Length: 191
Image (cartoon, rainbow, N blue to C red; front, side, top):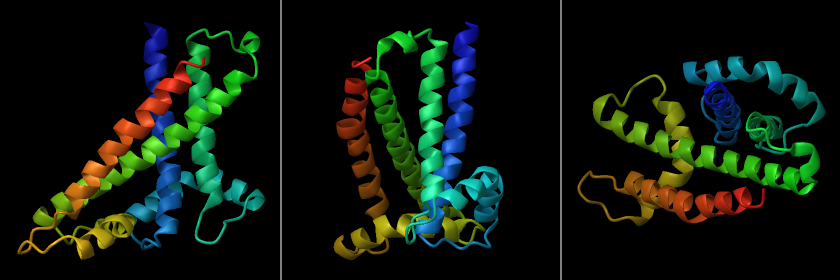
């Protein structure tokens, strides 16, 4: 029972930290407004790790490779700690386990990125009805614009009703069901 509670705490804390690193990387890639309170909070929250890693691993163009590497490392740590909490015989399992852990960490990053996009689109759609001038609306717009803008140009105009968030929602859900879940299932069965 204590192991399940500890696993829940680890999953929650390390997933939130992964989301913070991912959000920092995505905010830089999408050139979100830096002086926004949300952007400033994410930078302040992740500076403890991103600054030292950035000295070793520079950005590649607009891609904040330090933040993305830290997101991956956090997911790898989470997967490793969960196996250890479940009393998995890590030392006798062989090198295949570390390949599976790397795959699970990569899938964890992809899954959290898709969820981040999904919730950003949902929050932005709700805010467009309730309070389109909310302080973090420009950040949400920057995050979702690369996905929504092409759809807005190609979908028919329905008199002010924007169907692009619905399309993104469906595509993300399909990716999670048809791509991420089967890969995760296959990786777990390699253990």
